[in-house]
Image 1: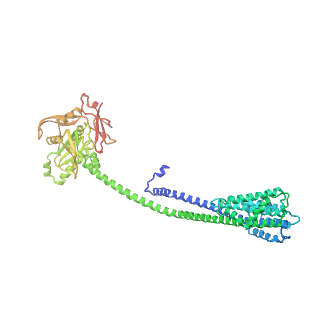
Image 2 (image 1 turned 180 degrees about the horizontal axis):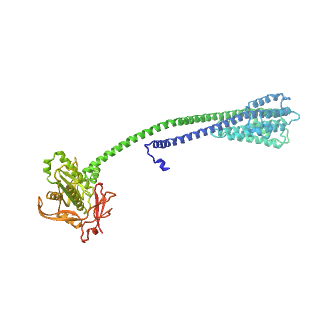
Length: 637
């Protein structure tokens, strides 16, 4: 899986992979927001359906409330008819029968829960109307009793009221639940007020209650009415308990209170029959029921209005979420288009940038190569980091000079181009020899070629050995004339001289920078070259002592000579090497006598014990920071 993502982003596959990652970063929050939007739409749709269902239930409750109001009125009128308070015939009941039938007609839907009820008369509106019509037909002043009338109609009223209360409780949520609670309580108050009207009118019509149970039911209805009416005021501003007290000044309210008091303190054995009081109780209580019915209608309208407002809010939210979802869906292809375009532009820019970076790297490499040809790599690296390189002092190093014998004569005999060609061939051949040893080409001036070892990277006491082997290689090449076509009629000869000692080094100037060496060792090496002989390697006494102790070279005393600026000096000739460097045919690398593949420590080349060369040294080599020089360490075995 990890290999799949490790691709070249500049390729076509890399482009699409990068585009996929970009789209993933963009679309993950978009999809999350889209999912939340769809979830919110679903939630609002569900809430809307719930509110619609609650609204439907409330509309049914309102219609059922009207039906209950008319059924109670029909019940109470039937009681008056049986109690002989009516006109003596059933004709005066027809108006109430018509109102009840109209209330049934206004019931455009019948509660679904009624259709499966075990009592068949409630399974449909038509069944209930037929059930009531049969009772109306059977109503007879001689055979019917007030108790049977109360039980018949109360059964219908309480069945419908139970359904209303149960379903109203199920819709009590949001900002309408308080109004629904009040609607429930006022519905109970209407029912209880209707029952009070029936029982009170019956009491005065018959002169007494048939039994104590009906008396208790009468008192319970009044008590429940007072409780529900007072507590409903806590949940709605439409209900004001002071209204009932203010109504005390009304004639019908005062009459109800007087008649209640008379019934409350009656004697079971007395006869309190009074047609006037029965009619008064009925009429005055009807006023109260009308008030409650009006209050019930107001509460129902408020509930429906609140539900409508809530439904509008839900619809607006659904519309807003749908618009957001559509915008998100519509934005997806636009985002994909611009993302693809952005990825293509980024890829194109990356290719241009990579090419420019590659070109810059190539130019930097060329610049570094030129700089490394002018200065040692460690010095050049320090110079690139800092504008100035501090000069250094080396306690021990070896400096070598070479020059062409009779060079001034050659300048007169050869053309400038031929002379330049000669010097180029010679110096190129010497440059190739430098790769074999840990040496650094300092500079060339005219026919003079200057090489150093031990600078700019110290190599312990190895520097005289490196220069010695290099000098022998150069002289051998000159003697054999194996450095190319020289275009001269006589063999080319060199003077070679080197000296070992302390030197100072530093970068001089700000234009055409040069790494220059200073000190008496440089002057002595130059004198060794100028005082030398053709194709001979001239060294001073300190260098002789170092080389002689290694046992690797054939050295011959020259004797004491007079050196310009130095006076008399004892000098020597480096004739040959006892042990030659060996070349690895696989790697084309040269290995000096006693040299190992690597080293970890360094020590002096001196051999105070007098042990032979093959047992004394382990010469170990590693590549220098410049890549063109090698570094050696010599340790005792």
